[in-house]
Amino acid sequence: MTEYYFNLETRQVEEGRVSEAMHRMGPYPTREAAEHAMEHARERNAEWEDADRRWNEDEEDDRHRWGNR
Image 1 (tube, rainbow, N blue to C red):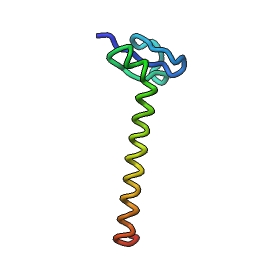
Image 2 (cartoon, helix red, strand yellow):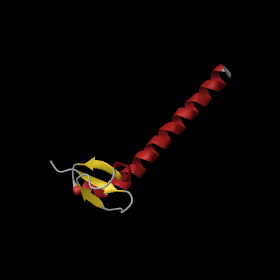
Image 3 (cartoon, one colour):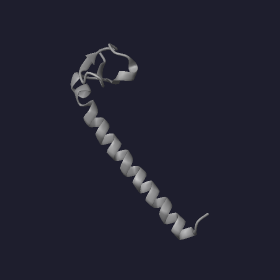
Image 4 (spheres, rainbow, N blue to C red):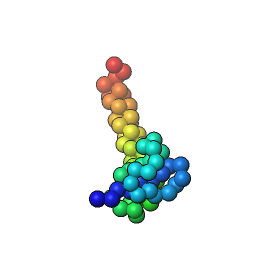
């Protein structure tokens, strides 16, 4: 099965492991999925940042509720 990678240096999709691992994202099942690698990464990062914000707010609420420990 063919795997596709997004090269972070060239901003191009590669078929197979062409470039060094440190310069690529993937593997992706299709060329189209690899083409959208940066978009998906931005979406995931935003989701993680939102989850972190909620986590920190919950901890802050607990400190106020139970006092600083």
